[in-house]
Amino acid sequence: MSNKKFELNKDSNILETIENYPVSAEIFVKHGLPCLGCAAARFEKLSDVVEEFGIDLDKLIEDLKVSKK
Image (tube, rainbow, N blue to C red; front, side):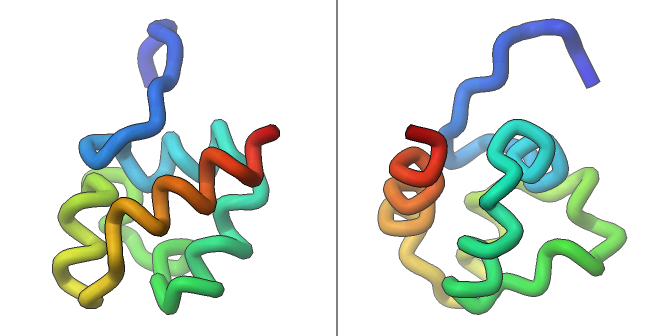
């Protein structure tokens, strides 16, 4: 991981998202994403996984941002 500030967007790494947004695990489950147990979570971006599972990327990011507040 780098020391730069994390910015949530479509290119965010799944593992970094989980580290920066602790409630993201619950939100991923709500959206039907099995990211927590996946070995690829450290390499894939949000845009990769939502495409694979047919998830609305904008809604996922919105839910994650709201949870951070």
